[in-house]
Length: 293
Image (cartoon, rainbow, N blue to C red):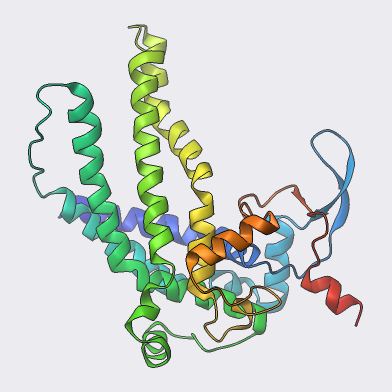
């Protein structure tokens, strides 16, 4: 019980600290660019037009809504974090059934443990997804200055009234797929690196093995980022907010439709980086339309 409580407290602290970062990231993901690009230099020293980074974007939000504006959507996100941590912990406590793969270490360490972790993460994601949807919509309200999702309880009532039960699970499928693929990629790569690349019994090798999980986790999250982007876009798409409608996004018929359109536009990594953001060729942002009016 104490261990679970400490995990919830730690997760809540990290959630509060990372809230401004996620807020900016979500607004960039939906294509909201309130500030014009500036002339800068890329890593090779060439002059390019760059979109505002994390700090410039955050300063703009503070200018409009004050410092507290950086924490919109924090309450449902804290609920999601706390509930998800408890559910994840409870599922992991359920004894896993023994597999039929004999004594082979690969099946024991990879298949059994990863499968149990996959079930735990999926259960936590499924139960907390309604809070995730509300969090995203609270953030996206910044674009149109709406107050439709001003409170967590009222947001539940609004979604149920307008979209029914399915509205609470908008964007769930790509989110689940991304989590599962990321988990298996991370664990498989870590296993292969630890078993074959770092198999020598040197102390330096042992120390490197402790970092392999973090490195492979970062690599796996980069590969599965499009699932995160599509999930977040589907959670706010056509929900009555300006950020979920044109000119930011068309009405997608499904998450596969969203995926294919982003792929055609070359926007599968939009929001993945919040620094050195180059202006894509041929892209016309909302700030440009407003400037020429």
